[in-house]
Amino acid sequence: MLGVKNSKFYAMQYQGVLKKMLTENNDEIQYYLDMESDFINMNQLLTKTITIQFVKYQCLNCGLDKQIYRQGFCKSCFFETARAGDWIMRPELSKAHLGIEDRDLEYEKQSQLKPHIVYLANSSNVKVGVTRKSQVPTRWIDQGAHEAIEIVEVPNRYLAGITEVALKEHVADKTNWRKMLKNDVVDESLEDWKNKLKQYIPEEAKEYFIENNKETELKFPVIAYPEKPKSLNLIKTPNYSGKLVGIKGQYLIFEDQTVFNVRANEGLVVQISIQ
Image (spheres, rainbow, N blue to C red):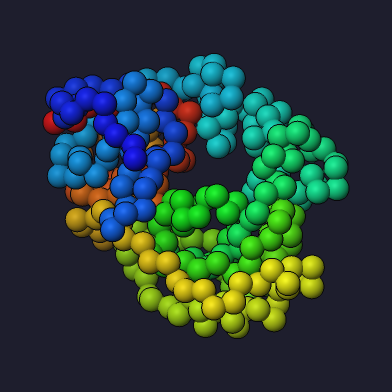
């Protein structure tokens, strides 16, 4: 269980580099923001006014104050580090199972040659996705899915990738973030979807189909959903204050309809104060 080191943090300021919020799947999902010296339990900040101020950049790989390009990395690190290889966003490009290096074979073996799950999740619509087995249900929480189900469990990332490629011919593979945040979703029978899609699983992965499993349901800590969510760009608006009314996916939801995607702002050093 993650904890908050200082129980008097409401009157304090925190500074640290943004990384995606850590989560625990309890009756209601618990969110924690790592501010280096403290973990802030974000659920406890609901109805509180939070000020977020941009301080500088800090690449998650080299640690330098260089403009963030993608995924929390500066441009040079994004094209060099093994943590940002093409196979991460496109699992079907994985080659570690063949002993072929992309950027760092040992790192790629550690990441790719582990059990992976191909799943269906319903956040704005039913979509197919891939994650390491160890990231269930974290991946679903990060996507703001209120329900999800596993389709196959395969021994490496490549098999998961080619399965996803085959299935996304018949079901979406993207989430509409606005619909997700507005909670404009329809409950679906993911078990029915899974069984309908079974016929499209590639031959190499058919033996890994998961029979007779049930949907996982997820509950997010949201007091009010935005009707017209507007995304906070912390570079253009380097100082923002608002009352926190919800957390869904990796988004903070504020009373004035502003939403802030913590994960999309990884690598930004911010100062946070709570009133």
